[in-house]
Amino acid sequence: MYGKTIRLKRVFPTPERRLFSVPLDHALSMGPIDGLEALAPLATDLQEGGADLLIVTKGAVRELAPVLRPSTLLGVHVSASTSLGPGSNHKRLVGTAAEAVGLGADLLSVQVNFGVPEEGDMLADLGTAVDQCRALGLPLLCMAYVKKPSGGTPDELRHAARAAADLGADIVKTSYPGSVEEFGRLCRTTPVPVLIGGGVRLDDESAFLELVQSSVRAGGAGICIGRNLFQRRPVEPLARRIATLLHGE
Image (cartoon, one colour):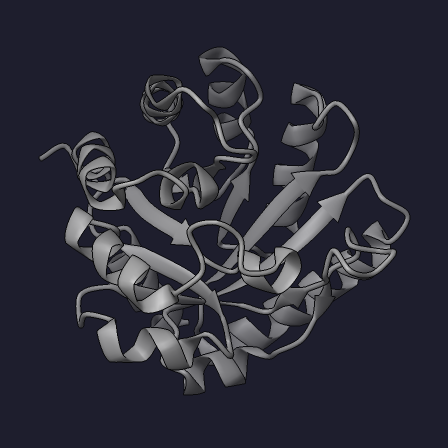
């Protein structure tokens, strides 16, 4: 119990400081996409820009470890599928909380895609991961997505976020429901900190920054955004602007 409390204090040291987290796990599911050709230089730029937490797959820790700063938090993502297979929305556990702790992780990351036939399998995997994390005092982040053509209605996104929390997730990442009012409602009905995800890359950088700012105004606990950040060049100046919005510095 104390281990999880201590680690969560590192993730959220003060109520005013929002978490600036960046998922860098995309290469497993999508291949070495634009921006993820080489992990170490990108991680260095993100840390220079003020990122708090970097989330990678367990194999990618080997590339990250030499450049990871003592003050940067590490998340290990253990849900996997690839776009090469027919069931890319069916994420399966490919690691354990114990492995993540052995790799130096500050939290475990698991993904659940709601609204697909395999939803039940992913919920079961989330339950397994929650039990493992509880035994080790490791916080768990659930990336809760609604995989429907619409991307999920506000009601569906609230349901997914609440379901992830009710199964034991300590932090939930989900999609933006379209307005400050709806995201505020989602945050109020989810009893754990909520991070906003970026989703598909937005062409307009100002629209992306407005998304970040809106999530803060609505009561979000921070961001967990990848492609909308690392697919923009140069990465570091934009990361600095985001850090200012989230950290209030």
